[in-house]
Length: 103
Image (cartoon, one colour):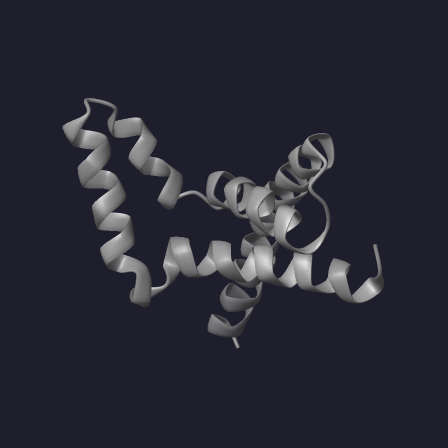
């Protein structure tokens, strides 16, 4: 693993997660997942597209496989890291936005 791959993993995981959860461009995707979850009688599955930790885990799996490794245990670890990184980034961004509102 080199520094460029690690950089791409971190920022593509966080970026993709934030686009999935907050991006207007993927509103149709969020609606589709929620509708599908309702149709199969599992509405909680639809919450994966509203949660930074959940979406970050799945994007971490994908980006870990794309940028870092095909080893299943390492891909799993990338998913765990992706969940943490995406949630942490959301907390930091929310903190910065709140601070800006009080200026």
